[in-house]
Image (cartoon, rainbow, N blue to C red):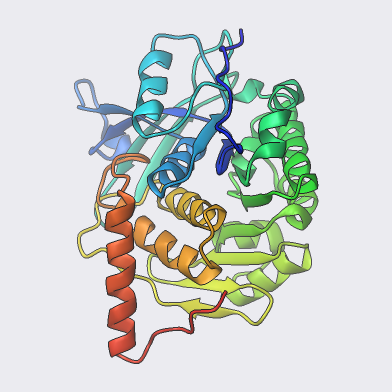
Length: 340
């Protein structure tokens, strides 16, 4: 079943996000200790929703391209996305349940997940959906998608490739996070998708060692970045823990100073927040340096909330932290050069 689609804003969207939306069930109890009566909280997440929320908060006209279910949770799920400033008028529907996951996280950054997504609505994403969104894709400034979306099903993989190729051919920017998930796909399949996507990618955000070991056989961030760039990605950002971020934009890899949240609650979705914010600010005309400064600030702030969209910082807060962090670095002689 197709949801009626509203016309795109004049000039097209700044950012489109293609991917999966999930129901999130959050508990403070270690999962192996969950028992009858364990308290939990329902919210909404998934890497696409997290990134779209961050892009919208960063000031971009943002739309979600996804397939959601027709179960009872679809109404509050879409309401939450709209509340976050995301245009959901182009979302498609399928007679399937929405995917879901149970999450336990603590303030030390440890997290446990249990997923239910086999046969989910999100996994029914197909090239036919992308074809129906072609005008949106050719008219947007930037697209965000991920390896998770490509791993949901063979049809989803084909949809990701077609969307990436469409945006690239139209001169748009593609941000891609390989986000390797062994429960969803094998290494060979993920590497194959990466090889197809990387040459189309303007910004590739990944993690090391988690993603890098599986996808490019590297446990060193600089080496990982070099291997992703060898595959064709123009700009690579590698996260290597909460306070280490490496940038390789073709002029040599270097670590960027990152603000650290003194009171973290849950890191779920922080990487998606980074990607969404960076992509939005690039689409709105920021230099790469400024876009990454805003992205690191937003990701730092996002860990103050529980779950993927538990805390989405307003851009005024993000910009203030980025400015304060840059001033601190300037005063201490650590400020990097502000280049394009």
